[in-house]
Image (tube, rainbow, N blue to C red):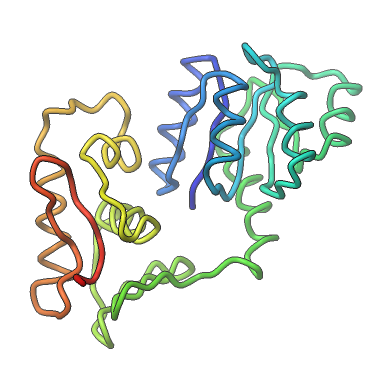
Length: 224
């Protein structure tokens, strides 16, 4: 699932980003309210984690604009503002939950999962490209009737590819989506995992789905 974290505190952002990725969420990070709102209207997220004390546009304004646009993505406010009026204001503006800093990551994760469970009936659990099927509920992957065992990183990589079927994904995009932002961009970790993933999902099957675009990146699609 894809999460947007709107947080200007570098330490909090790094902590939450790392924890979410370790739990196999795809994470986009915005450092101010304007950037966060632009991502919200451009991309599709399963959940938004939103600070209130943000530069350029505060969290209250972001919430109001989300509701004005009719965007129904659930929002968890994560903020140091701990007064009852602030909590009431956030919930009245349409936030689904309100968590006060300092916080336990395990509590944030539990609240996220509770909110995401509420929306599961309307969310597709299977992602498909040709005869490749990824089940997000069971985390199982099949080509035709053959089950394919993947490591956690290979699964996260494949999920990101299949959610962006037909789009060329650069190495930087893959590093940011599946690995930590601080990863050395010159590392060959992407190439190693792509090769392992390709061997598992493509070597013994047709059509071939995972393709290298020389000098650019990779794309998942059935060839035309």
